[in-house]
Amino acid sequence: MKELDTKDRDILGILSKEARIPLKTLAGRIGLSRSATSERVAALEKSGVIRGYRADIGQMDSNLVSAFLMVTLVSTPSMGVLDQLARYSEVRRVSSVTGQLDLMVEVEVPSIDRLNTLRDIIATHPSVQDLTTLIVLRRDIERLE
Image 1 (cartoon, rainbow, N blue to C red):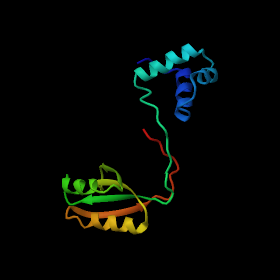
Image 2: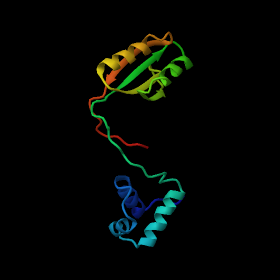
Image 3: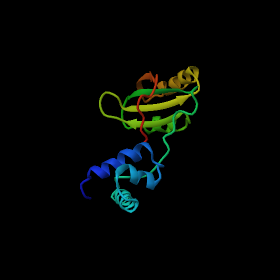
Image 4: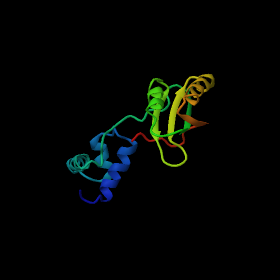
């Protein structure tokens, strides 16, 4: 892949904020012809710099409570805990991490009561040594890939 130049970086900057911008408008904003802009965008896609276009959708239900459950296991791996977590639709993401923790579990629940119930279910699994809950107050920056 060739080195990205200023025009490529301008294209990426604009597309990261306005993925649906018309090619003609994009070309005008970066100061290139439509065909030159189209070739650059195609090259960025082909090289994997642009991996896709998507809608960045905010939290659709403002009544949801988001939280991270930081889990320490008795021993790793614990497929039983992962199987249990997979059963709950409120579990959005589970990541195995390094350090003192073993799992970061991101959940979205309709209420604090449901968060407590889900937390208690997970905490009482025989493979769970410790569980700490962090409630998300707001998302200041969120990028989807």
